[in-house]
Image 1 (cartoon, rainbow, N blue to C red):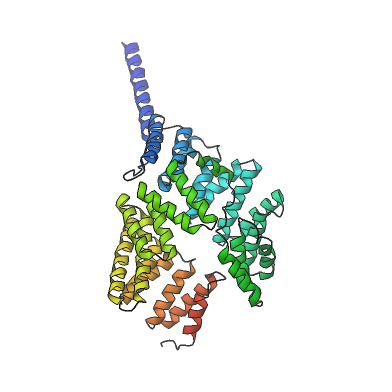
Image 2 (cartoon, rainbow, N blue to C red):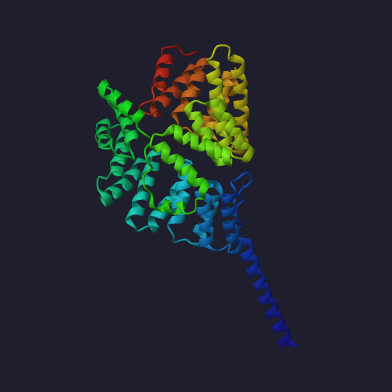
Length: 449
């Protein structure tokens, strides 16, 4: 009897242990991310759904999660791609591509969360080309964040690996510029004026560094204006993404190629054709942004509304629509008899910015757009609150300090205004005269007691 009880007890314990193990496996098995496919091109949706099915079939496979993340990232689904890459790293921890891509996507969003995965990828990468690409990306982002010491350490490693290559000289020039060494910055940038990866930026920077030689500065400024957009620096890891792009994305690549060659009209017409043939949210968003940059802000707003009809939860589309409506209002406000239409656009811009913030409350650009539109509507206190939020969200941006400084000055709060205008001057690029002009305008005014 005792033996039977012991056997029964052992059996029950084993069953409980097995149930616990299965329960633990069930609890710790990740679920695929939600990917909104409504309004998405059919071929893209099929590629995503196929990759999702593979993850459902093998939910603890790093390979399956990695393939899903590549399909998502290659076809414009960045948020679920980042989520998927976390699982790919979890189940395939020694493959450098996963932390690299996660860091790359996060850095592209200006998120400091991109640094840890990039540092981890660097420890896993031995191939020289991939290490060089990682070091370049790390230094670029560290400079943007003002972390000069770590940036210099990685830049030293990159220079030891490939000497004074164009990308090393570009980073050396950026570092010198940020540290106020204009002589060294000029030297490095002058060597890059024919590099297809940096010539436009180099000429633009040189124009701002040659104030003592106005003729040469104008020549560089003119050259920068005429040059096509710089090509992206080669990054071997990202070549994997190309194989996962469907035809729709290849159309976008063709647009990028035309744009980089200075064939702007052809590039825009290609996007218009893609939207007309089979509109999807990503292409509509891209076309809307391009039209807004061209100054066709009212057409841009209509295209962006189409993007939102296809993807109502797109933070980027809501934010771009708000910015386009603000610019449309500013444009109409400069026209004779355009005041009423301008006010209507400003009210719509506030609504679009509110919709952006409902989805992402810390969206600095949305706060900035909202504040500017409220200021134009005469709602001063609300405008100041919105512009202060923009500065809190993105204190490193000159435009945020400039907008808040000017609004404060116009509201009679000159002491605080001057502080923000001084910050705007400090953070501004070399070719942006607006902060300095605003500071000079208001500095002579007497602050309120």
